Image (cartoon, rainbow, N blue to C red):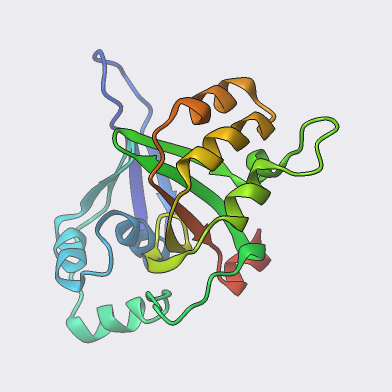
Amino acid sequence: MKVRISSEAAGEITMTKVITRDMSLHELLEVMLAVCGRDPSRIRELLERGTIVESASRFRWDPLQIDDAALAGHLAGFPQPDPTRRFDAARCVRAWLCGPRTRIELTRDIAASKRVFKRRSFWDVLLESALPEYVDYSYRERADLFRSPADGAKLREAAALLKYSGLSQQVARASIETVELAVLRQAEAANR
């Protein structure tokens, strides 16, 4: 199906280019799942409306009618939350340090890079102090999300291990109460 994608960026009045892209229903459903989760009635409503805003982009297509059985069949191809999943540090790719008015995102690559003459990385300290519990599956991240209480003092002290000084200072000053972790499933990890 032809999908028109345009910018929804806030600001002054600007002329932005509209891109027309061929997208399969599967790709369009992937965008919808990231926005509204696995809610079949909401997804059907969006398909019939023919528009959705995701981040700074608006997607438009010719309205599409789909019955419950067909939609359920399409959604069956997407991962579902699985609270029985265990935390796997080897497939953990992203972390968020969270507290009141604080949400600092760290990728594994950035947090695992070591400073000169240091044996450990911030990522090592972060994972060794984590006691993660399953939260949900994130279609936006394409990963299972886990949450752990954080030892804020220990993480602020370990901020000196971060390679980037601006990020190090931000973490050192943050009030950190929890850590959220994104863990890829086997298939997603193989595709990276």
